[in-house]
Length: 53
Image (cartoon, rainbow, N blue to C red; front, side):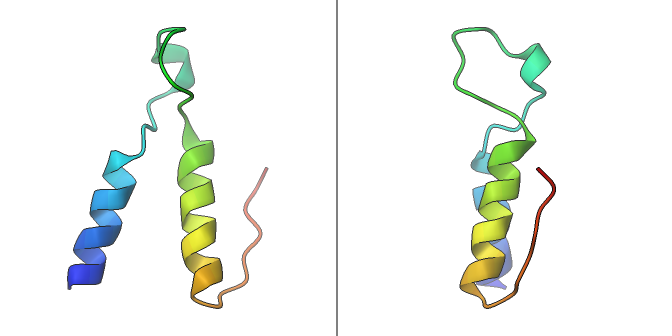
């Protein structure tokens, strides 16, 4: 269960707020960081994936 908790903690730490709602001074946000994170996790586990870009 620790792997699930770690996964959820990592995902909730990634700023994924709609970029239109962020101030210009905020760091880049949006779904791209979430997609990159999930792609890395899957690839590291030997699962091929091709996320939409």
